[in-house]
Length: 200
Image 1: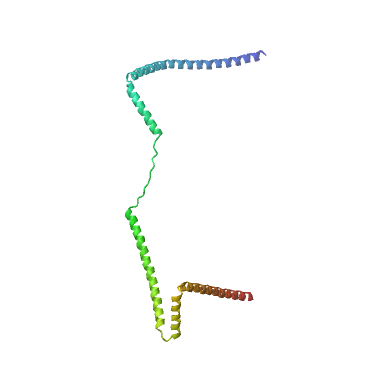
Image 2: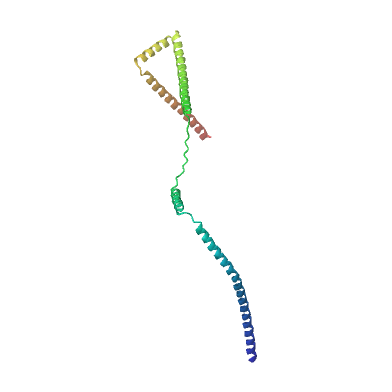
């Protein structure tokens, strides 16, 4: 039992001696830092004297009060202008010269006049052709019944000025009947094809 107590004391002594050694090392490190800080104290003192010197220099270089007030008022007016800055808008105005508009107008007018001349020329040609045909029929004296019929049509036109509208209506009616006959023929042909297909 004494042995156990001695072992425990020995272990306790070793542990405590190690702890004491580490504390001694820490204390030595702290003392070195304190010695180094004494050197820093001299630097801090020099720094404080330099700051005091700078403070006295700044006091000696002070600007006049009027200059500072003028600068302050100008600065406040500039800040007010910067807060309410104007918007820069770029407006693009495309101008076409009047000469271009006049040229375009003259070109359109010239085109209309030319198309009018062309239409008038084609109408005139059809009138000349129809007049030539009518006069040829009138010259053919061997067709006496045709001559009498043409005289009757001429007198009818003199008495009935709306003859042209009636003629156009009759032509439209004939055209409509012709189209119906063509459709009937086409349907008849389709029916015959279907009938032939059904027989096969």
